[in-house]
Image 1 (cartoon, rainbow, N blue to C red):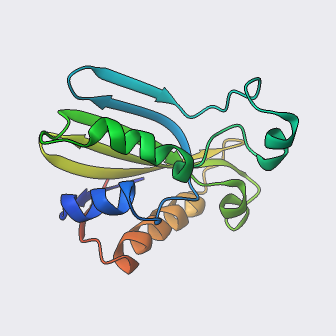
Image 2: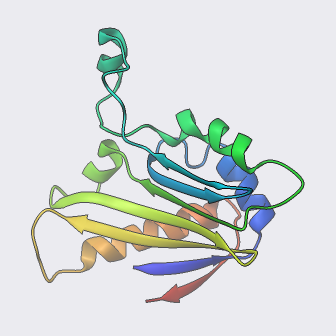
Image 3: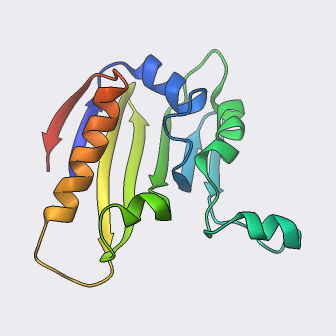
Length: 157
C-alpha cells in the first residue's frame, strides 16, 4: 500500500471528472460533502436494467465513466467540496493481468483540507505472506499518474 500526495489537484480533478484516465475503473463507493453529504454506491441495481442492458455488464459495479458526470454535477460550482472520497477498483480484465489470487485492486482518492491523496489497496482471495502483488499494483498506479504527467509525492505506508 502506498499513499500518493497529488501535487496538482486542479489537473488531477480535471482528469478524474472530465478526462478518461480512470474511465475503465469500477466505482465502488463515493462520498462527497458540499452543502450536504452525498453518498453513492457503485453497486449496479440490476432490477432496474432491461435484459439487454444486464448483458452489457460483466461486473456488479458501474464503471467510473458511467457515473463521473453525476459526480461532476455534485462537485461543480464556485466552492470546492469540504471532503470527498472516491473508491475505484480495477476491472476484471485489469486484475487478470496481475494474478488469479487477487479479488480486488483499489485506489482511494481522498480530498480534505484542500489536499488530494491517492491510496492503493489490494484484496486477496486467500491469505498469503507474499506482498509482490501489492507492490506490482502500487507500481502500476504510480506509473499511471507519472505517464499522465500528474505530479505526485510517494509515501510508503
